[in-house]
Length: 169
Image (cartoon, rainbow, N blue to C red; front, side, top):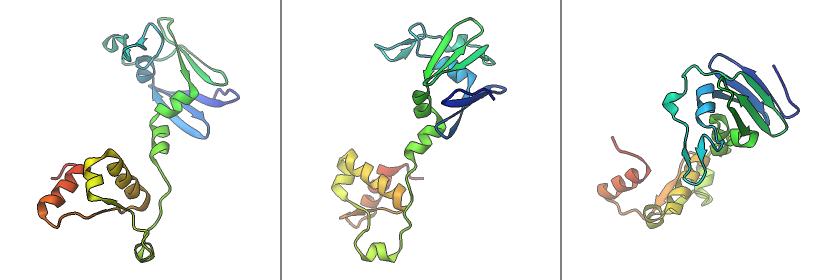
């Protein structure tokens, strides 16, 4: 497994494994080629790819890989070199995104409820603002339970609350 002072990597069939900052990430070669941000592949003014994705061979594999302190360099069969910042890869990898979303869990019990530490959001804030929805979802992720207070006691209002979170089946 080749290493640099900041990370280790391994070429596998169809994907690159990269270990950086204690996170093992997996990137498909096609994804790495398709997401290249070089001036010939990506227009930074429009935030659009210039590379024709359909022209990229589905079985593409880099011919060479090099890593320095902060950057991954991939050389493709056509000679094109793709550069990725290791921090960018971490933030845009499935593993890195999962770490950003994951928060510590707090088990709830009767004590939390009785001591008025019940995570709750007001009905109008929940329905009318993204901040209210965000607070509700953060409470739910953190505690595994969250409440919306002052909801009119009707089936219709309960459905409105449920639809704000997700589709009802």
